[in-house]
Image (tube, rainbow, N blue to C red):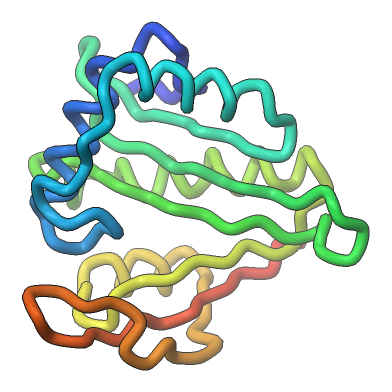
Length: 165
């Protein structure tokens, strides 16, 4: 398994990968809702790679994207020490350490930039993700009530954080 920054040439595969993740029901986009073109994905990757406060790292095995972590930092002085993260792992690679490795990559990126607080939200019923985040030192900070509406039902998310040393 290799971990590296997402490149503009990964646009087609990354778009397909994200559409597969959307099918899980645990991501922000509903299944079928992501209507981005390959060119739009390329432009988004370009924007991300040009932003020094943001990172998008992928796991890759024999040319196949297995997972990603995106960290969005801040330029404002009072919140420059924090970054929001999103993580996704392809279903067949869950339970094989990809999520842990991607989080470790994210921790390294954050420390190198002086980021000492990582934040995320996770659906309350996503037990596997909650277990992973807790294993990796994240703590529940609060609950976003009715934060998402999935299949006509409101769902709650947890706010989670981790302080880096």
